[in-house]
Figure 1: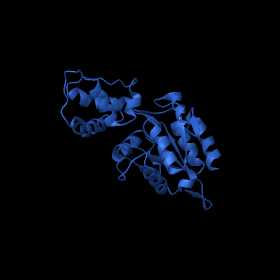
Figure 2: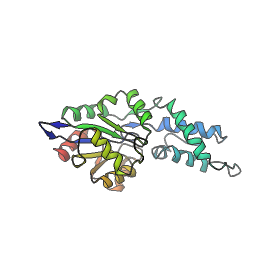
Figure 3: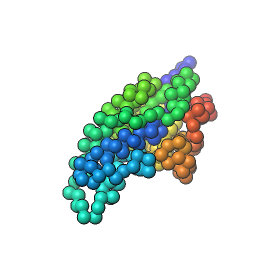
Figure 4: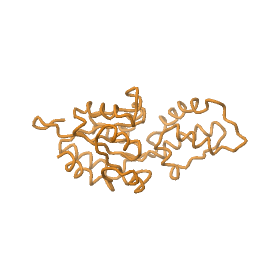
Length: 230
């Protein structure tokens, strides 16, 4: 986005664990797959939230690891269950998911200040589109790049760069807001700053990664954008 012919800057967001707490619905989808295998529902939406935000396969592996020793999983169980997990998730993706407090106000303030907004997520693009629409904020974002938009995904920097380009910005005048090591690695690979949220699944513990900034609440984000992008 430009303002008076100048690139005002682009703020790129991760989705799960950054914009919205999606753990409950992600865990429900994984547990549905695990239950179908006779493994019960071993994942907890609170205790295992950090696993949820590392993706569907991570949840399945965690569930398999908790299976009784006498239960033998067939080879290829994860590859069989992953598409089923996505189907289950598509049916419950907004049942309990909610935006984090202050998200909408921060997005409105950033847009009013002239910043372009984009989403770069490792959630499949179609599911990300549906979720943002269900949460009522899809129109706030000029661009969305998902796990399957390109042949590669985060932490490869190309999806990040693509999200900035689709938003009409330049990587040099952008930064990433995320919640995991994957987001930090993405930013480092792209050569941009990263702010990690202190209200995501790992809480304040995410500061251990040494991000360029920690966001304790979304109300601080417009000020951070001014500091970093002008």
